[in-house]
Length: 466
Image (cartoon, helix red, strand yellow):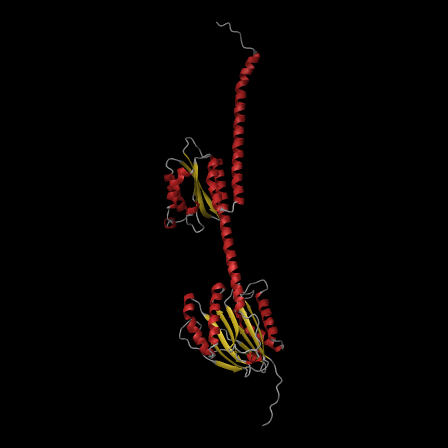
């Protein structure tokens, strides 16, 4: 039987407190570790967010994504696969870490054909193929993946892998990885918007240049022609339009008063379509037409020759042109004209207070190489008003969906002419009526052009008896 004295009560208390202190220390260490891990993760995510708002180079940002993802979940490595907006594999932006371990994997992923991916039925099939391919290439590694989604489109796939035994993907890991994937999606969307903005800026610059060139090709002012007033305006639906009007002297070598009394060509045309292609074609036709006018031929012959000259260019563009060509002799007030299926001009006869249409048979320019055109003529009396216009005027739609139409144009033309105002006043009033019909805040659907010619009223002396 032992004679060892029983422990002192203070010793018993100390012995019982030791495990408690040890457990508390362990808990503090665990909390400290968790806090350090949390701070580290916050710093990693903050660095990725800083890169997102600071980097202008998408490639530099995407290089960080696998590195941050690996450290966040304490994995062995990570792989980022991204796609273009049209679904093609973005091979230049394949990112992986560590580089040595993933070199062969990246090479084989880059070898994936776009046709092979396009043949798959839907995004789910593409994801399944990538998961299978990467899982095989990574061998026995544990792999976790999440999608990079932007505007409901599959823009990529982020993979992390680890071969560590007992490694488990916790819910925190999943949330962190998804956050990295979402930041990647934002970066890809920002890049897409930036590229779209740059394309629009380039297009705007091109349109501005085109509009400037076209504005220089249209007459900047109406010429002086003896005995008439002229006013003209073109309002393109876009910056560059397909409408064309021109005043061309048939004898450009004349100067001063002799030039004013010579015959002038007055032209109104319209390329089917809008924007830059239509504007370029009209520019081409303008040069051809001005060369033809110098030949001195009659209107129907000029349209015939122009149609043959432009046939090849128009056939390649799959477009056609309507064109009304007329020439006016101030000495006789004779107007000769031919029409290539353009809207017939309207003429207001002052003496009868009636509006008539000026038309002649003829096909579109560019439709048939051997098309024939008819020649018509009329004499303009003092006070008569002639209106050339394009279909953008009569086909303009109002709030109700109705068109401005020719009948409404005739009515407004007649009202403006009867008021006795000049050519510029008539033009201003017609455009004001058109704007009121369409609406001040609405854009025209097509280019709208009008040219007004008014014969000055003269004192009519009675004829002397023979």
